[in-house]
Amino acid sequence: MLCLIIFFVLFLFKFYVILRKLIVKRSCKETTVAFFHPYCNAGGGGERVLWAAICAVQKQYKDVHCIVYTGDSVPAADILNNVELRFNIKLLRKIDIVYLRSRFIVEAKYYPIFTLLMQSLGSIILGLEALLKYVPDVYIDTMGYAWTYPFFKYLGSCSIVAYVHFPTISTDMLKNVQTRTVSINNRRYISNSKLFSYCKLIYYQIFAQLYGLVGRRADVIMVNSSWTRGHILQLWKKPQLTFTVYPPCDVSEFNCIPLEEHDGKTHILSIAQFRPEKNHELQIRAFHTFLKRLNYTTNLPILVLVGSCRHDEDYQRVQMLKNLCCELEITKNVQIKINLTFQEIIKEMKNSIMALHTMKDEHFGIGIVECMSAGLIMIAHNSGGPKMDIIISNNGKKTGFLATDFNSFADAMESVWKMDTKDLNELRTNARVSMSRFSSNKFETTFLSAFKIISI
Image 1: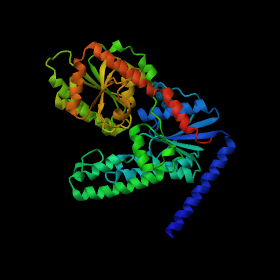
Image 2: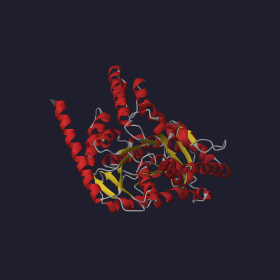
Image 3: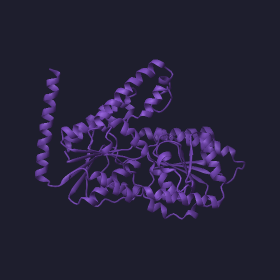
Image 4: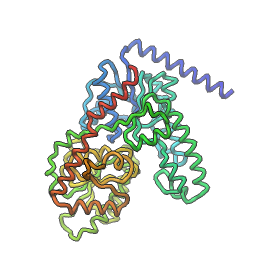
């Protein structure tokens, strides 16, 4: 009886969606491409990909109308203004913003246990709300909500495009649980218990199977790095339809900064959203270790943390970082700046000599590319996208530094601090030339090349 009721409800939903789509088609003959990005106003690298993708579609397809599903309660004019200020991106034509009220249901803070599963189930509800409000021809998920794909594909009859920044679950996460390693996704009380670890491993293995099942509903899969590609191929198993599309980095704008602009500067810059996985605490502790190694008290370096905050949790995290600086007695040497505009970020880059990025298994790292294009000496975590795609040798020449813990990050900072101007400029030049691989034009070309598989 329960199965019959569920089937009947889905049948009614499907009928409603078809009827709504027919009504919309009568009033609008344009093909509609919808981007599912509940945090479109967040101001991070994922949002840059969203707006650059919309811009690319508008350039290529003159008769396509774009819409964005978002949970941000911000007027459309303000959202588009922020896009221009933060990313230097101006759309060619009008788009529609479809506001979703149930975004709260995908936020991790409501699910202290079974977080991945509950967020994924919550995304189904959020996706159904989006589908009820607007039925597009093409559905593009740019935030990683794979569990919405079957509903848009089978109930909405949409073509599905996925741009994956970071797999919801990865083999690395499974390995952490299996080896009982403490990490963001594996708390200490779990790793300390053989029973809890075994139960969580079973849960993760089942979840990974389901994640692969829904992910394979995508008609085109784009991934942002070699690291992400490896995991998605293991989980979704669609190699012929999986394309590596590096995120758009506005390297041309940063290349305009003269390399000599950084000579004599004492600021160390960090650009990353204030989220737990970015590990700003490691930056502060590594910087503290580096400061202790300097045998003078004047003209000390300043660590500048630049990032965006999405909600109260992020602002609380910023306050925790400020408290840590007080505890380490380095408040005068650390500045935290939130939600800066594009031009303000350019100014911070000009005032800096090097940059830090401490997230382990960072899927790509747009901020890393931007800093290297701007002429900053980059020190990033020896894993993920930075290791596999970005900080690699250019014609046999070094382009930056990789580190793993606060001591190795401090070592790298000390090495840069002691380098002479000639060596610094050679490193900057190598890095800048290498970063041309990640330009906005390259993103547009590869994105549209993969997207053309969809018939519109």
